[in-house]
Length: 117
Image 1: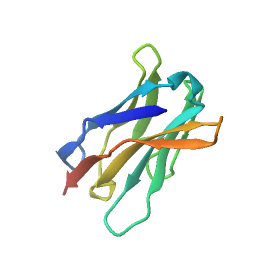
Image 2: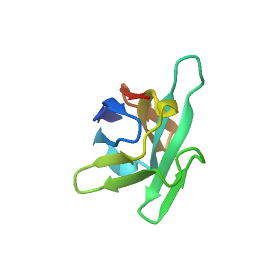
Image 3: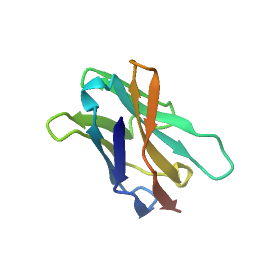
Image 4: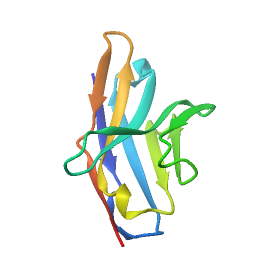
């Protein structure tokens, strides 16, 4: 089992920045990759960014150049640095971890990000 807890959401003006954190606990040694997803009202949940290692990351086109995903293995924490935020970035952001053994996906409870224009 893996437990994920997000923090760092909030209200920010367009053009501002926020950093989200995701603290992982439990059987974290089995995690193959971690990711951030988001879900805006009335829309499907979408992948924002994914990290396998510091050298292997992937981003949605809509956030490339503005968001940076990183992972601190010593702290068992993943981050999402969000710069140049836009109103369309408003959503609930979810932390995700994938464990290949058993093909399990784990989710955090989500954290609200609201960007005002």
